[in-house]
Figure 1 (tube, rainbow, N blue to C red):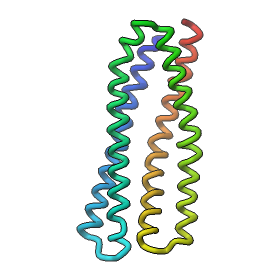
Figure 2: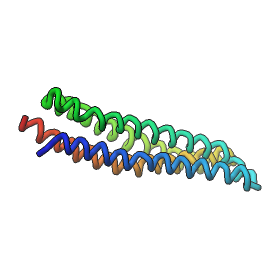
Figure 3: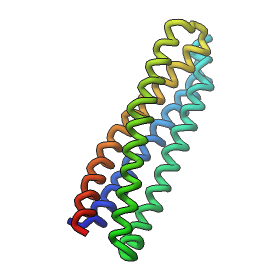
Figure 4: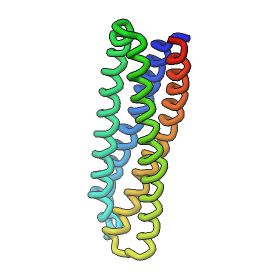
Length: 168
């Protein structure tokens, strides 16, 4: 098995996935502009700032991940050629840490925050609160969906790294 090819394929898949954060962010920004231009009710006007903030955050997340993975893609061949066992060990450690972060943040904290926001919706009835909570739920759902697929990719990559580590 060629672990360099597996690492490169994983990074390329991430480069395809991360622009979805940017796309979602642009949709939130478009919604913000729509609420600003077309919003007539108090509730519609209350969505302007939360959707703007969510859009900016998603664009920042997407661009940050894109450029990080793009740089990583360029560094893989150099690191592998320099010292293949060290490359596999470093990537295994990074992938294991990332999987742990996903378990803690994406699959525990985000669902708890979504549930808390949904619960708060029952008690907070002001338009600003409702807009902020609903936008938070929508943004975190987007993150959960995109990161759910990223988790599956990095878990498969980690398994390939474990096999490569045993053979090197």
